[in-house]
Amino acid sequence: MYRLAVAAALSALALGQDLTSENGFLDANVGIGADMRVRRQQVVSIGELQNTVDVLTSTVAAMQASSTMYSGAQDIISDIAADTVARTTSVVEAQAAMTGRLNNLQANYQTMTESIAAAGAAMDTMAASMAQSSAVAAAAIDDRVDDAMAQMSTVLAANNARTQSQMASMTASVSTAIASVTGSLSSVNTTIFRAISTRASAVKHVWVGGCSSWNNGGWSEDCLDRVRYNTAAPKFRKISNTRHQAIVTGFYRIVKFTITNTCNWAHHAAHVNGREIANTHGHGFYSHWKDQWNNWLFRADANMWFSTRAWAGCGHHATHPFGGHSRVEYIYEGLLA
View 1 (cartoon, rainbow, N blue to C red):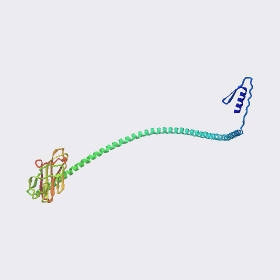
View 2: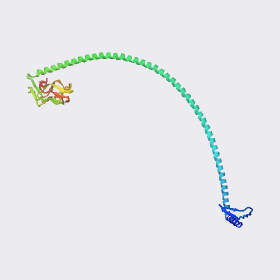
View 3: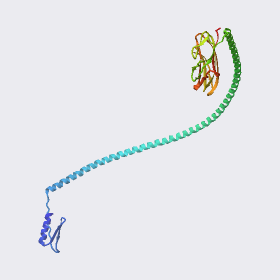
View 4: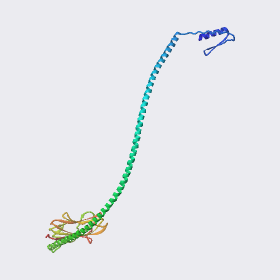
């Protein structure tokens, strides 16, 4: 190509013609009627030709390989198509089977619905029958209960009448027994007093006195520091500020009078040689004074001691100081029969 351009340029120069070259092209300005001879030379390279042949050979081999691969792909596509048809057939058959089962289920559901409706109707009928039977049974039970209540009322009335009769009889019997016991006790007391008076000496052995102070609150022995009379010897004697002691064996008596001021309960007791022989249980209104009379007869052996005690609630006055509102008497009644 380069050689062609050079030759053309030389020819143009020789002929006095304009010749230009632009973008790989050769332009010649030839006059009208002028002749122009163009001679082209081409050089062929054997090596380049061999390379071209090799490239063409490789291209043909690649096309043959592609043709073989395309043939294999067709086989794969055919297999996939066959498998798809088989799977589609299976799906169609499964769908047909499922349709049959669904139809069976619908038929069974319809049957069950009808059975449930029939059972509901039967239950309604049974419930109505049971309600009617229950009403009849309830009425019968009410009648029986009324009859039973009437019978019970009759029996209770009879029992009440019998019980009242028995209670009246028992009351009469108890009253008779109490009267008999009271008479017996009165007879015994009379006998004892007569025996004591028979055995008693002409001289009375007594001690009369009391305490100069209050006896307040909890349990404590009454003090004996005030003396009005004292003829106790030789039957008994005072051994402390709170106690007397028997010198001879016999019957003794303690008579205690006082007024008590308490907030609830009040107690007065007598003790013989540490043993309680009596204990009163009185109750008074809050801070109200109340008389307390005690008369205790007891037996004491020689050398036994005896005393009185008192208790008042809320720390109030259990025993009033000696005087017009309080005194205690110790008396020897006589020998034992």
